[in-house]
Image (cartoon, rainbow, N blue to C red):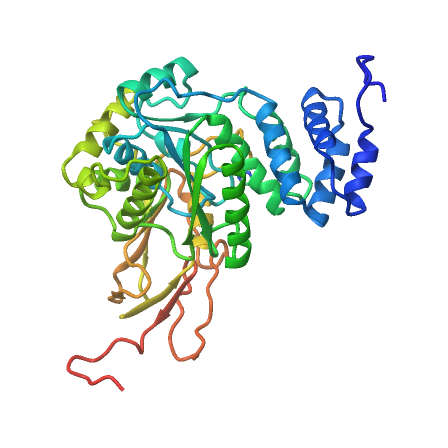
Length: 448
Ligand code: URA
């Protein structure tokens, strides 16, 4: 096969597509070629879409997905931090609502003796992106050169920035293509996409936080386990010590969803406070990251949050990237409280509905070039299982554009559910909350 440039290609793309379409296994040479040729433009977008669909339908063997990942890493640069005086370790979350964990986690792990070279992304759809959150800090920049990353890892111990175009360029193209061809939901393609970027980032150890639930892009535990197992295998194949945790994402993490709102909550955690679920996950992931890096007996992450050393790293990280850790965070121009309809217990607060709400209030984007509002989002006052009094706020909505607030006559973005027993009341005004009034015990009443 001769390419447009006149050079002879090792394979014909149609043969590769047919092999996968008919349920065959691609050889190492075919995989290497197709990824390289796609990156060079010698395999057309429509050919890669057909191949991605064939992979989605017929899967990949363990060998194929490992080779596919290695080929995507080899399509660009692989960073190397081996000259640092401490081990590197990182975390990847598959994305959830209110997932601000990286913000406190990276400084905490650095305060305990590891270096964290985290390359993060921006949000698209209902899950937020770490870079959007950090960019709500006045002056903070996500763009660093490799030399700047190296200096910051040495001097501060943690860096959170955008991946440069030179890292896994094959994945950059393929991910954009999958997004518009209905081929995102393939375990081998998701696993190789995530792991190619993390391997190229050069971390020595990696902890994967695989989210499961309504607010995650995987709703069932079996698929989440399959993805986690595949990614752990890919990490090990590439010499990255990798572990995975499956964590629940049916209810938002913490009490905020939105960029500056989440930064404020992460700073509370770094100051030794913050919501219990955020603190617990931060400490759990930090311990896993340190263990994966071989740092078993040093400072404990809970102590780093308590003694101010994690906060100290955070302040240095923000400053090193041009931000002012003392600046007032942006607030949205308008707020709207959603009130509890009566005394009762909140039985469900759907993570996806809260994520969609934050997104539609302006915290997220529909297209990757859209701007985000730093102050927009949702603040939660009550979590499932807690009591609330009628007339008190369940949620506060924040936006710069009040026309984004829902009006009761418009269904957007309400997603109410009726109660199973049909005896309680459903909060019909906003968001996906389920509400039971009969669960409130009368003072002195004996439970049945
Ligand atoms: N995140 C990625 O980086 N790739 C995927 O395929 C899915 C989520």
